[in-house]
Amino acid sequence: MQPQLIHYLTVAALLFGFGLFCVLTRRHAVGILLGVELILNAAALNFVAFEHFISGGISGQVFTVFIITLAATEAAIALAIVLMVYKSHRTVTADQISDMKN
Amino acid sequence: MGEFVVFLILAALTCVSAGIVALSRNIIYSTIALLGTFLGIAGLYIQLSADFLAAVQVLVYVGGTLTLILFAVMLTAQIENIRTSNTSRGRWGAFALVAVVLLLLGAVANRTEWPIRNTTATPSTAKLGHAFLSEYMLPFEVGSVVLLGAMIGAVAIARRAVRRHPEKE
Image (cartoon, rainbow over all chains, first blue to last red; front, side, top):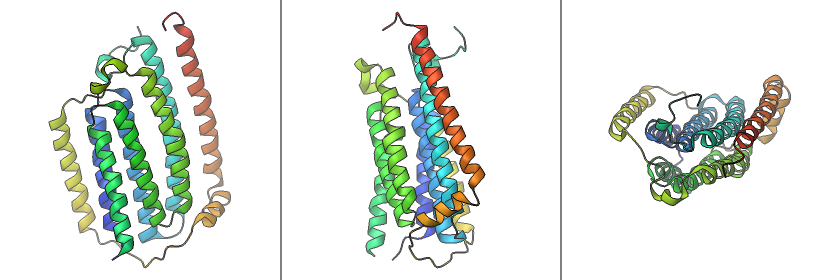
């Protein structure tokens, strides 16, 4: 028995569910970022699975490379912002940061 | 049969690690568990004959992004109460919303007639390289400019954060 498309879709959907739950409930800013990474990985896995089982060619993997690139830039910028917020507010808990300028 | 067993092991590694990321109360455990998710997805990429992507996944995510996130956690988490450093709020509402979304996704995936084609596992790195240097040349170059801009921006923001409050810490 070979793993089929629906199995990969199930794994990606579970990853997306955990990521969404993480983004919705976390109070730590870095915890929210971890949830975003999970969601991006679920989307990338779906791209590769659809390309392998349905469309053929190479375009799904190209999109996944761009997803990985943008996830890396997003992580770098977000962590720089987290460091800056921590320096000015002394906390990174998302619901205690209510002002944009102090 | 053996391939399906390997798939089940990788899927279990991916999903259990993702569960720890989403549910652990310790931010360090959450971050380390993300390592398992990334490695499991790299294995799934290999099964989907995306060998180059598996290598990139390990190099960029595990080597770069995860190290960066660990640095941010170590620099900002209050170490004295690390056990409860990653608390959650509104779990039941979020659980209901996620359940609805997953049921919807499952219904759509089951009802669609996917035009499955017969595939064999073939290496795809050469095809990917040709695609990047011909058809996807412009997006590839724009991507490198985006990376450069993000790197300069991150350094600028982080340096200002350090310079503005030199007396603290």
